[in-house]
Length: 405
Image 1 (spheres, rainbow, N blue to C red):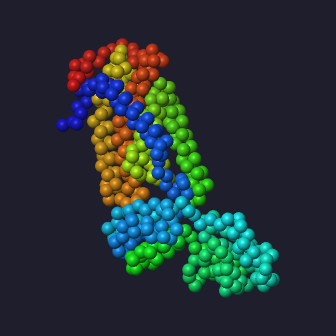
Image 2 (cartoon, rainbow, N blue to C red):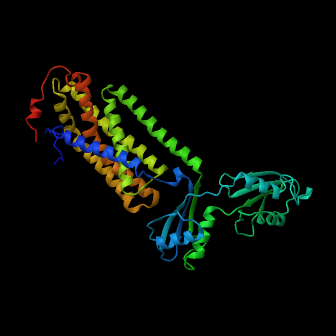
Image 3 (cartoon, rainbow, N blue to C red):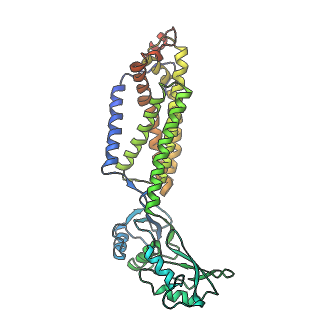
C-alpha cells in the first residue's frame, strides 16, 4: 500500500496562501532574532579559549562557574556534556586568549638579551626570538650553548608572564642550533589551575583535560566573514545552475527556498539557545545543498509535465507533479531524518548539534520545495511571463482532476 497513491491528485496549492503566510512569519521572525537578541556566537567567531574537562566526581555547572570566578574569569560559559564514562563533563569557554603585547615582546627580548639590556653579556646573547600565534610558546636561538637555569631565572622575573609548570621547561629544542623552547602558562592552563584550586580535591585528574582550542578575535572575525561569503557565493551559483538547467523563471524560487531554509534554521537555533560556529555553517551549507536537491527533483517533474500535460493551468500542473513524487520525497526525507536522529540521540558535542541542524534542515527543505519554491515560481510565471509556463501546447489533465482528494 502506497503512502500517497500517485494516481490520485492532491490539491497542494489550494491552501498555499496560509503556508506562504507561515513561511513569511518564520523568515521575518528569524531575521528579527538575528538582530535582537542575536545569535550566540561560538569561540570560532568571537575569539577566545575553549576547554573540555571530564570530572571524576559529580560537580554542577554552578560549582564550575564559582571556581572560575574566583580565578578571575567572570564571564565564562559552562555547558554540560552528556558522558556516561565521566561523573561530570563540561565545555568551558572564555573570551580570552594567551596573547602577548608588543611591550611584553620587547621585555622578553631584553631579558633574553636579544636586544641590549641590563645583565646581558656575550655568553647569554639570543640572536632570534619567535613567539607562537597563541602566545604560549617562545622559541629562542642563542649564540652559544644555552644556559637553561639562567633562561628560567630571567623569564620568571617578568611580571604578567608565568612559565608552565614542569622541570622540563624550558628545554633545548635543537642542540646543534642552540635553540630553546620556553612554554608559558596559557589560558587553558589557568582555567585548569582554577578548577583544581577551588573544586573538591580528587575531582580532577591529570588526564581530565580532554581538549584545548583557542582562536584570536581578529581570526574569528575573518572566519565569520568568510562563512557569510561562502553562503552567499553558494546561493549565487545555485541560481545560475537552476537557470541553466531549467529556465530563468525557476531559479528565483529555488533561491528563495534556500534562503528560507537557512534563515529559519538559524532562527530555530537561536530560540533553542544553540551557538553558531564553524560546524553550524557547515551544516547550513549542507542544508542549502539538500534544499536545492529536493527542489530540483520537484522542478524536474514539473518540467516533464509541461510537455506531457499540455494545456494545463500551472496550479493544476504543480498539483499533479507533487502528487506523483510526494511519496518518494517523504520516504527519502524520512529515511534521512531517521539516520540523523541516531547521531542526535547517541552522539555528543559537535556531532549532536550538527545532526540537530541537519534534521531541521531536511524538514525545512522538504516543506520549502512544495510551499515556497513552487508558489513563488507560479507567481513569477503569472506576473512577468503571462502564464506561458503553464501552456506547452494542447491537451488535458481531466482524468487526474477527477481523482482530487
